[in-house]
Image 1: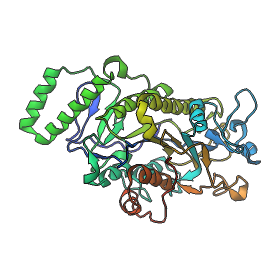
Image 2: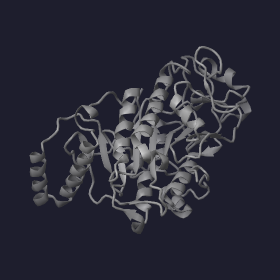
Image 3: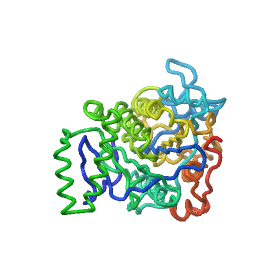
Image 4: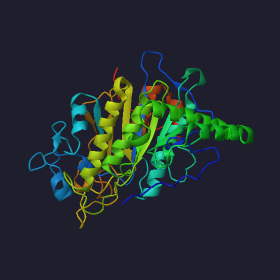
Length: 413
């Protein structure tokens, strides 16, 4: 089942450029580099549908875990053993790349995490997660776009700032700070002559759209130079399939690795609503986690030397019930996990104020109790990667969130 946030209506400033589903916006923001030799990058992956954190990273050291999560609980024994992370938590066996990165201290997990939203509507939950507001109903812009907009003009350099991957722009990166967009190629390429004639037409009829088209053609130049045109970008699967996740990450990594490419990207992977036949170490959830794991691998390979300065965070709107239901699945819950990966991450650890899984310790006696606000994780990444202040993070990027302090130490020295 694939549940999506509201799809934005097309804007007159969006344009389908040559070389596939490429669109651009006028007046792209320039992006901040740190004063040091670092060239930081941030990738945000939205997992839409609500991820079962207890089957993604199992608290095998909790004596109540196996009984609560039943047939889909992870175990260190059996035909599909989980991958141990420490003495208490173990990773779903569908994620060997993440396990390798974790061992190399380039990946971490934040467990028992959630936004401040406490209902269980996908649409409202995704709205809160991507908008960055405390409650639903704020669909005009996303927190990542506002972070781009908040970067001081004097600290920006002459590269493209943001990238939206997919057929529509995720809410998290929509807003006043424009971004580039890329999706696998669905349409045949237009020739250079046609593109230039269209550009000339818009230059006379619609200067704003002409600027956008010109930027789109520049992005197409990067795509062609990086070997992403033609067969390389023909769709291999949707955003709820393992091949589709890999392909989206592969394209984003190539664009972000370019010297003149974007430094920030947002991707959205669908299909995490696992009410029926979820599976644990195998099955539907394992297939999805394998796709996410493949995306991490594609970013590591594609970013090349840029990997060392990269942070990736994968988050979802809420978790799932601690108990399985009658159809060997889980229903909408609360606490879940956030995955962090990248050469910039100070990894090799599971960050958790573990609440326990006894009935009295569960949220409303049914869900993993959230002890970490996802906004604290996101604030910490933005502060450490790009130097955004606590005041900007609490007032602009995540409005009215002063009580949520940025998590420190997520980025290595």
